[in-house]
Length: 117
Image 1 (tube, one colour):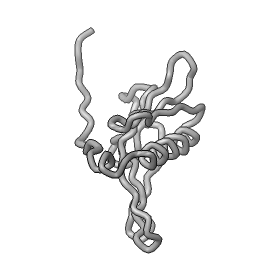
Image 2 (tube, one colour; image 1 turned 120 degrees about the vertical axis):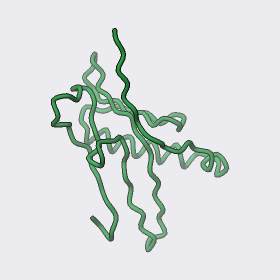
Image 3 (cartoon, rainbow, N blue to C red; image 1 turned 45 degrees about the vertical axis):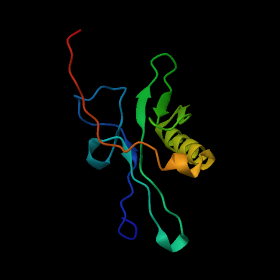
């Protein structure tokens, strides 16, 4: 906690029912990254959803932020991936027209489905 705001980080799931190639954010087992909102500095941060998986061929972690064109990256470690995807989202949002920023999709949730294969 920092000034009443929650900061969360990536961690490997410890639950054996979670596939090895998926990683969760600590907060509510979702893929939400919570950013700080520090009004004193005039900085307003937003929440975005990142889908993270591990590429089976390269072993790299891959992150995609649905709804933001061009917001994807990869890295060898989860720490590096978190840094990279944050930079990419900041860059993509920074290059957007202010009217387009207002039209970004709202995150509703993640639902797992089960299918027979």
